[in-house]
Image (cartoon, rainbow, N blue to C red; front, side, top):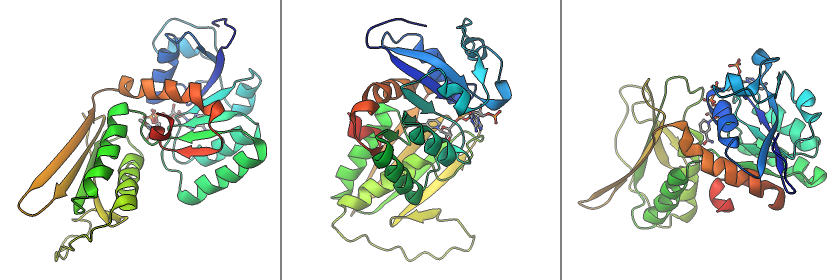
Length: 267
Ligand code: NAP
């Protein structure tokens, strides 16, 4: 373990997954962040470094969060699955530990429930559907553009192992656009002869989810105006693109009160 006066102690939940192991690798290079525990039920007993494809780091993966808490983490980073994230987050906040949540799938209701726990225990959370700085900027730009070009559709493209659809980023983008939209959207007159052909509708915006091998995480927002179309697109080429955002979140979560939704609020 790295030593230092203001070291932030990190537990990675889902440590042997694609994102969790990327976090384990990224932490090696951070002077003020130290991996103290790794949780992933099916890999329990193995060395977290070796599982992440780097040198052994002496951190044995454990099966439960409760075992991980024995290492006294300051912050839990969660990249598990939509099925377990709500229970995980409740456990972490109830243990008075801050949590950085990358796992998608939390509903608005669940986020509210987590806020209530956070108020009671004083532990904070950041829920970020997308840790990539480019994706955060795409959301910001989309909100700005939708003030002038309210008609828009979102296409999000991910690898075929992604468990949920649409992506949390697509929904958050639509939410941000809807919050600032003041001009009326023109309704299309289309009726579907194939169910789902127009995608899902969220906050008035059609979202189309593509799932194919080869993709990592990509999103396009297409704005239609009178005689003009504006498209903006973001591509995460690999999972290292998420790491600077995760590291910012680990450093900041202790000082931002309550449950925060979206990395942009930390920037
Ligand atoms: P993944 O490769 O399937 O990793 C998830 C890991 O969590 C697996 O190792 C899984 O183990 C483990 N796990 C399952 N249940 C657990 C539990 N109760 N406690 C601890 N670990 C548990 O998935 P991924 O691609 O890393 O993605 C993880 C999540 O992050 C997804 O929701 C994804 O959409 C999201 N994501 C977010 C961002 C962002 O920027 N916010 C970026 C990419 C992905 P088993 O496989 O053995 O069950």
